[in-house]
Length: 332
Image (cartoon, rainbow, N blue to C red; front, side):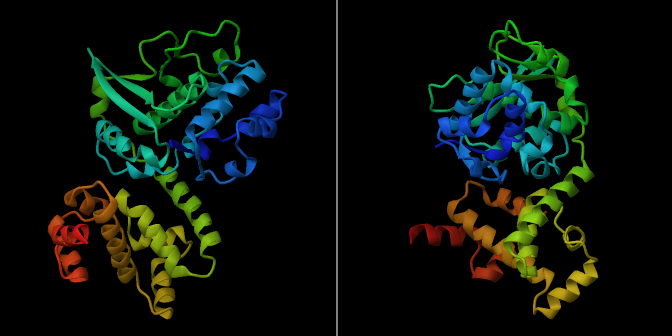
């Protein structure tokens, strides 16, 4: 089943109420529940979301409902994606890496880059097993792509032209007030950039990064209200792929000085380095058994600059090199 984070539909209820309809009733009609939208990291059926947006567009008589909804959203709807590509040097590298992580936001969507003269088309493809009209969910998804790219380029999302294969709605003036750069009846769904923009330096938004870490902390405090070590390990797991995992950033996310964090961990018989190694070991074993990364890619995901250091640590943990351990466990 293709899934998507429910956070992709952020602000749905409020917008539907403003348009004079009952959002809960619409959810129930397509087999979704309000509770599934409370936590933005809850995964729901992508096909069901498409059905919900399509039904809502019909009921509210807003053929561009998906776009109207997306225009109320910010990069927060993308979850961890912006953070996970933050260490990529160029816009092109960030886009390539984002495709590897898209499943964390939505499984069933892919972005393809196609050269078109001096331009690059970022074509969005939805592979959903459904007969439902996908226009509304495509509007939402193209805008999400624009939000993501705008963040990489450090430009206003309104400056990017959105391309849609669908025909232009006859009577729907609302979108003209919100986003004028729209093209309909196009050959693809997505956005278009100049080829030279791909080589631009990937914008690093420290404020957005800190906001994501703060949001993660709130969830951790609910999940592990008394266990500082588990909070630290979860933050480590979250930050390792970004290349930003260090005791100073983790302590800052927890609202304390790094020396204070070290003191509190010591009082519990723990220390940061041990927690870091334990987390790396857990992730490494899981990925070697179930993941798709090469050993080199896995080392980078774990924050190792040198694969030899990762291999040495792994051998200390298990007595075997990563490849030897993987082969042995695969045979069992």
